[in-house]
Length: 173
Image 1 (tube, rainbow, N blue to C red):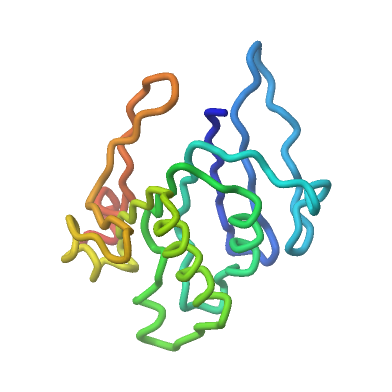
Image 2 (tube, rainbow, N blue to C red):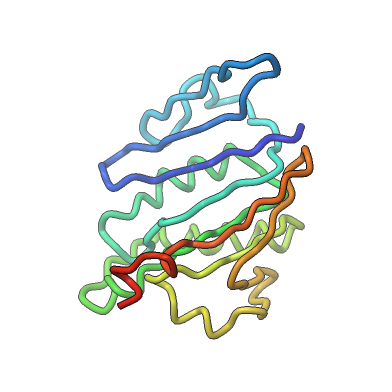
């Protein structure tokens, strides 16, 4: 099945947005709703493998990070590709105060485990984890660090993956 699942973790507590691909002939399939750490109606049923996950702005190292919800989502969504598109670790916030929970460790461990087991993991640093841009072109624990990436969709469309902070006048100056 060639699907893409996009996860957006919002700053508001316990809110995960799930967007599924359109059905042939139009309309969106019913997307599972999240309650707590389990996806309603899917607690016992494994989700089908998806082609790609696009994750950004996780902000590990902050109190606002929703690592437990992300872990629940990752348990339910095996993928061929995982694209970590910036601000995965919030070094800016960690300079002021550190809020690193065991769930934050588990997120890192899960990404490393997925990479070891054959999922392609591409990490594109953003402005909050910009220190890692010095390592673009490097592979750490089977996770590739890249400045940008071109992803080809199942139907042949090419998508340029960047965090986007480079185009933001506020963060550039």
